[in-house]
Image 1: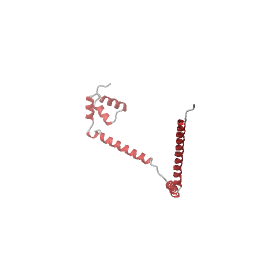
Image 2 (image 1 turned 60 degrees about the vertical axis):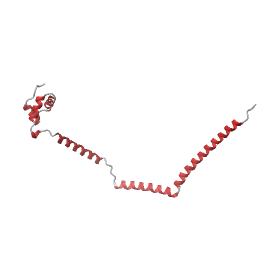
Image 3 (image 1 turned 135 degrees about the horizontal axis):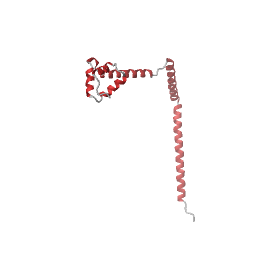
Image 4 (image 1 turned 90 degrees about the vertical axis):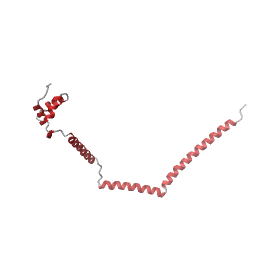
Length: 145
């Protein structure tokens, strides 16, 4: 590993004229060498300063554009024919509900269910009464000699 890089090498790094392998090695060297870090910052001219905020904001703008593009692509669109078909289905369903409500069929269905429930309850009550009567009869009979 090289002890220090020269100012010319750092200028080549800033200009982007060095091969990628050497650039990576120089970046790794900056992590632990204060002297080379100072030479690197000196090689940066005011016009070459790193614009972190600008880079981040452009990245955010790209992300937002990609999100909006994906949202536009995932929107479900209906053709006029499909809209008419859906509207017809809704109208038929609403008409059927109104017809069942006003014709009394719905009341009959609901009443039939209620009367079925009442019939079930009466069977249960009769069964419990007959069981109670049977138990009472057994317990009140005189014992056999």
